[in-house]
Length: 517
Image (cartoon, rainbow, N blue to C red; front, side, top):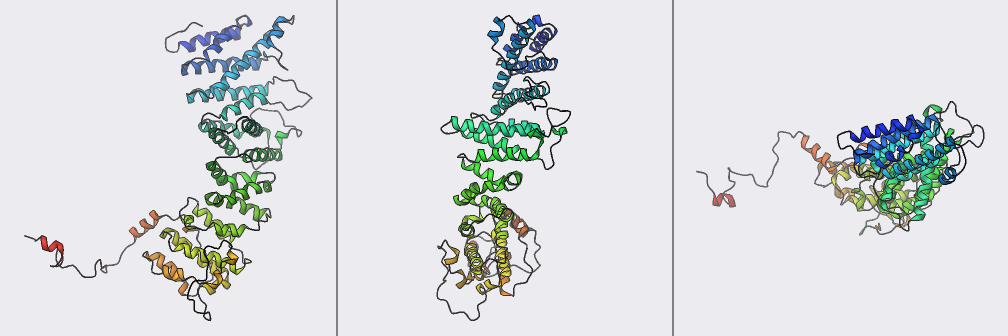
């Protein structure tokens, strides 16, 4: 193809070649000129070539001019004595494969516009191949989908070399179609396994791309219908797995289990655990298969354990998971950092749910109340405004623990019997102690904290205080709330001795060196 340097020259030249190939089979060799432009280093020329290939092979697929069946070797067919039509279709099918391979390579192009166009063109070919299959059905009513072509698309999205999260977000619109979603789950499961076996240490870019794709998959609540398919069918056969929601759940489960069985970066564990309770567990065919992953995550400690609580809560309450050391581990998570972590609100919301049962032993609830009281001594005001009502709610739910704030016949204590270093709440001796920390906090510098700690001075009311509005409270909100408070007209003393005159008292340093004239 002669290069036209004028604006739009490549488009016009490709257009002429395209028309020639579609008009006559004698001009088939012009396909090589079109495919050659796909190798151009100019992004605009490459895009024009992609558009030309899209129109060319789209038309050939619709016309049925590509060979259907197991594709034979090009050399064998060309050297044989088979008819010209068959040779043409085999030859053009090989050109189509070459085009698809190049489009797959373009998914890693530096220009996002080229990537996006290559992706949409490949998905157009997937749709056309589904409507005009290039493989023969094995039996009547056999479900055909271009799995190999589609798998190459998924492989391109799951690049081990570069971040494709933006391209995955572009692909997400296709995941709204039931058949694309189903085959994405199957293809992603295979690609993750292959890449993990290929690399001794899988690059972080691959895991991030894989998570971006997997987390974009969302299963429907209702049964599958033909209207939701990307490749249109007159009607769905009940024999097709893709037509049943339970098969989608199985594929979804295999996909996530296959992903989570590998050693992932720590940051990715956190991302998975954040969406586990609402985006993964509800859609699994057998949610209990996540027990091992969640219990291992819970044993890690720190923020990972905090995030694992949500998933464990669902398994314990909805799927009867038995976890003997659960409360001991939960008790171990209470350290000074719990008031400062990003997931503080989620942790205390779940801790409130776990400690809501009236069947919990008094020593266990007392240990939690005592540990929180001790930690409250160094907590920031915004955390104290939440944790103090939390402790009082524990005392309201479990009357046996009220001896921590009122023990009329108890002995005088020279020292606090509570052992903060003890990991087992049953051995911490919390029930023998008292919540003297709350009395200390009644002298806190912040008046709202002091008021919240003073609640224990009166009989605790039966209705609990809702901590939901306080879970997300921040230091900025506390400060803004204080600024908006209307003060009374009474004078607020700023010094022990009132100031006299503009420069203060006569013995002040300022008055000694300055005078008003």
